[in-house]
Length: 314
Image: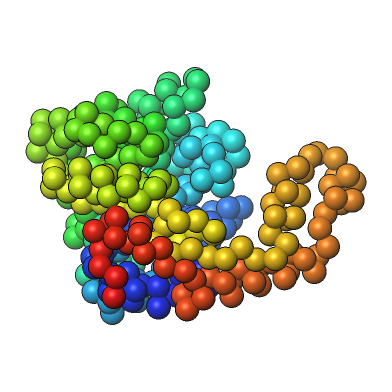
């Protein structure tokens, strides 16, 4: 198990008050079976929400992988293109999934809100033409969610990996907040000026839904910057393999590099892929060791990173 109760308890101990929980829609409804709902998948969310309720942490549910794909990149496990914005069936499944979640958690006090789409529409050539489709889709999802749940905040991320707020007009419903992501740029007022201007113009709350993937000095400066403007934050990710750019690090399991190299070198030649495939025993050993290494008591706390976030080591 990548995250367990002990992880949640630790996050509370160091001083955090909320966590953003990413999920893949296919955990809740099979890709090839519209209208089928997987209770085992919902139970996974129930469990982490229960751990957070026990610890006194709020949860923001984040659809990291939407039907059809909202980015077309590996972060949403899609098919190389943000088909969500062209396929009505994918849009309907996205709306149905969020409505189902809202029905389930509408009375759950540990759930702070719903982050509808992670980093929609990359900046790549030719994709900006999809930008005008983003807010209309948000309006449809919000209407479905608020038809059954008027209690929770709904977070809307901008286009271009959650950095372009020009796609938004006036807030169109109650309980909306707008989320931006910030990576690998300067930690100065200019870097977040468009989001501050949007907040001022529309009197709308904004939230830094993702940042991180940098050294401790950058992390500390980012936290200082956004907090100086009254902006809450979440840093990505909580746990990584062999890295210091996260709260917790996991040791690399045996055979891991062998498996990664095989995956990176796969082609459409199935026979050649078979010849290059690592032994099945290596794959099983690697995955089993990964889960074992991920146990909180076996992971490494990156103390510098925790301090950079402004948190206190217990």
